[in-house]
Length: 136
Image 1 (tube, rainbow, N blue to C red):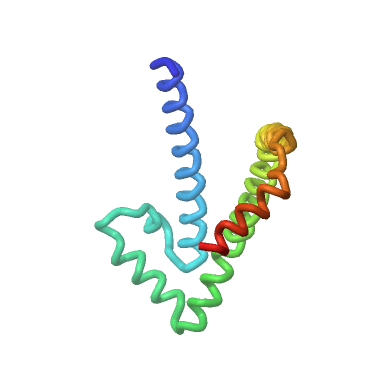
Image 2: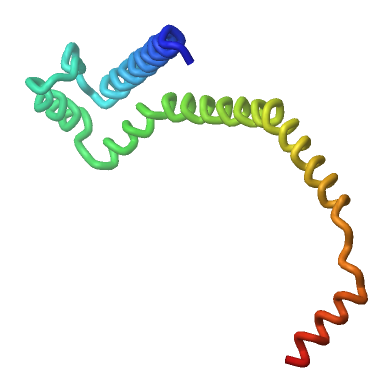
């Protein structure tokens, strides 16, 4: 692999990671909004983390309310995650069937050919070896 190809792969990887982080950030903001974080407080930084927790605590007076709101807030993200997982597994199975399956069949055929070329051990020699081992 040349340097240019490696550099192109790195850029593609960075682009995909940034896209994933952006989606994660968007979902995180939705979850915080659904948990009761107000206004610009969902701009996460260390100076307003206490404000975020205060908003969540104020909006969710009881643990039961917090669990209910957390379930509601994360429902869409969980469904999206499950859908992505299923699609990724289907794609992986398809790739295995297309790429690995033919190679496996080739190796299996070679092994079968090599096994059929092996001459069976003559029965008489087997008996003599067994007798020699039992007499010792």
